Length: 149
Image 1 (cartoon, rainbow, N blue to C red):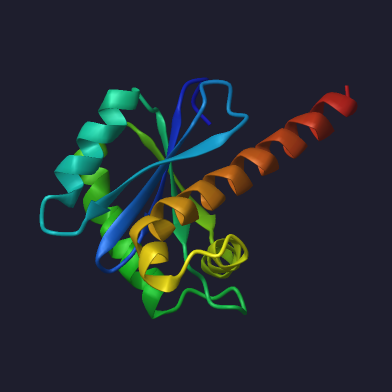
Image 2 (cartoon, rainbow, N blue to C red; image 1 turned 90 degrees about the horizontal axis):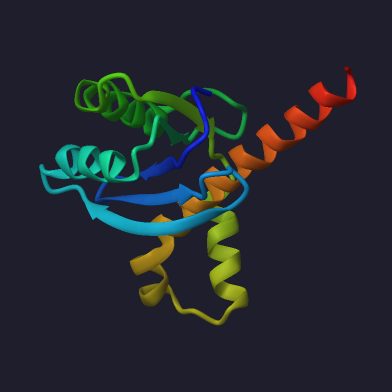
């Protein structure tokens, strides 16, 4: 982790990329937008990361249930390799996102939001869940490190 400041998270899908961002203190995550994968997505992500002055981007890696890198994760890794060329010295962290789709779907269902409406914002919600999971992990890790002193 490079420094304080906003962290941006991406949930990379076949047609869209969900985006979320942290607060500068790395406590909460908020949904930001959904970027269409129309050939301009890398420039759009670069612009967004720059607008937040983010030094770190968390990208959900959809591993299989057994923790392996399957075909979907391979597609995300290919996306990440291209994205690295656009982001320069921004740190990219891959984060296990195995259950974010299921959690987002259940969350929408419990709120009574039907499938068509869900699709519009689900990608940003999944990015939020990826980022909040990462922030919670960092918070727990920091507490453990401080308790050892």
